[in-house]
Length: 109
Image 1 (cartoon, rainbow, N blue to C red):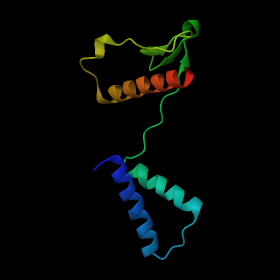
Image 2 (image 1 turned 180 degrees about the horizontal axis):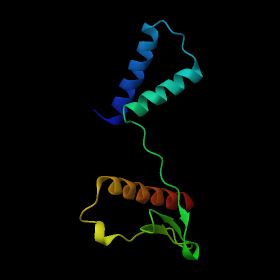
Image 3 (image 1 turned 90 degrees about the horizontal axis):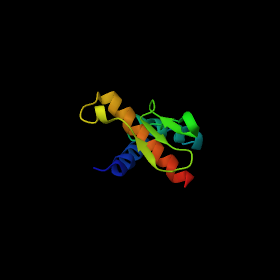
Image 4 (image 1 turned 135 degrees about the vertical axis):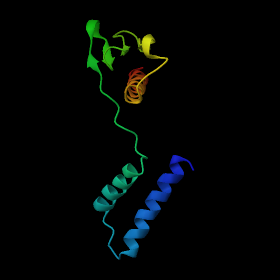
């Protein structure tokens, strides 16, 4: 089952339960409840980290291991010592940093 299929199922289940309980659907309340249901099902992506200013106008993500130079939209990665093995939490943070830098570079180009 894809994430899209899972999201459809979560929304369907939540709306169906609301009808079964005889509750009236309100736009604001339902939107928040559905968003919470999607988050609980693990279907919302985490927020991407924000860059911090680095030397020479570079934008840094993840403690200087992922960056974009001021005059270049390429994403630079400097973490060769850890590519073979990473703690799962560090790997997750590193992956989000690379994704955030790539997204920023695409929007800036």
